[in-house]
Amino acid sequence: MKPLLIRGGTVLNADREFRADVLCVNGRIAEVSASIPAPSGADVLDAGGRYVMPGGIDTHTHMQLPFMGTVTRDDFYSGTAAALAGGTTMIIDFVIPDPKEPLMDAYRKWRGWAEKSAADYSFHVAVTWWDPSVHKDMGLLVQEEGVNSFKHFMAYKNAIMCDDETLVNSFRRSLELGAMPTVHAENGELVFLLQAEMKAQGILGPEGHPLSRPPAVEAEAAQRAIAIADVIGVPIYIVHVSSAESAEAIARARARGQRVYGEVLAGHLTVDDSVYRDPRFEFAAGHVMSPPFRAKGHQQMLWRGLQAGYLHTTATDHCTFCAEQKAAGKDDFSKIPNGCGGVEERMAVVWQEGVNTGRLTPTEFVALTSANAAKLFNIYPRKGCVVEGADADVVLWDPQASRTLSVKTQRSLGDFNIFEGMAVQGVATHTVSAGKLVYADGDLRAERGAGKYVKRPAFGPQFDALARKAALDKPVPVAR
Image (tube, rainbow, N blue to C red):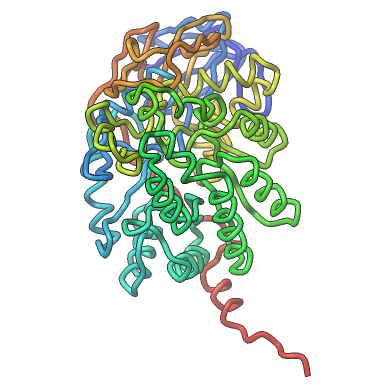
């Protein structure tokens, strides 16, 4: 591979921006300094007038996901290729075992599917049931496979929903191993009840979806997960926070000193619940995901959470189903496959609605699209930072360039775009993955299988398994 010299740009990291050249050699950043002579045979990329920032990390995607009787349109190749076109150079996807399926079996299956990835990838592994084999497999995943986060669905009753016993056992095992529990916070029992009530009232269309999943069911689950994590003493990461109530629950816990982290989707920051009342089934169903899009007031609270630092990452929950698949719920909203796209659009949407509106600074943008994710999942500064020694995953970002987002121009195989017609100013013009130019001014050069699996080490000494186990097993003194 030829060396690549990125010349004349402004390096933008989460802590500062500064004028520098960036030299990439053998897939790594070899040098970042004011003026770098081009090595013999190097390719030179002019970054004048643009930011040179770390490639985005999408902490929440579902490529090739079997779900609700069908499989998402985007597989690991098409989905990661679309990501590269938007400036995202790494995804963290989800291994989701079937009920009673061994975790290691599911993990190996997903690893096989992901071998076609065009960008780097890693996995959260869902814990959907509990017995001694799950306890054992969690250890193997952390210690041998570089998995340091486990997902828990508090929704989807009669499918993959965790009960509290499973949450407690998995949270405690995560603590022993130095892994982070993550949760999809919705009270599955309440959702199941409210779905039945909506249908009994004759509400069968997509408008029933948000009515059966109001903010309160998200807030209750978030508070319950936070309380369980507090008792056990393990940090917790709450995915796709969509409501003011859930954001406030995280803020309260953090004010008490608890380590709780929140993720926000680009869609929840920009799309509101009016989409479900559109008379066109295909349009309304195209927006069905969980948690659903909320009333506009919730968006403001999510932005404030990102500004204040009690929400930490932005993601997409990229999970694409076509109109034909969504039509399975034509007469019953609860049967509409849940999922929307966005892996290609996320960074431009967050820049447009964050930086261009003054809500975020450019450095905060980098924190929320890459650096915080790398830190929270223990791969910083290998990822999330333009610095010597880091992986050469770099994006040239033109803050003046504009684009209109549309299904007509997206690279995703989905046939719907929740950001349809949105004009954005500030886009990725070039994407470098592992030191190779994979996107250049509209020319996508993604290669099937070029992406690498990224191991994420267990967390540091504060999670030492033996010390934690000793503390947990120590009898509690009884007052006499």
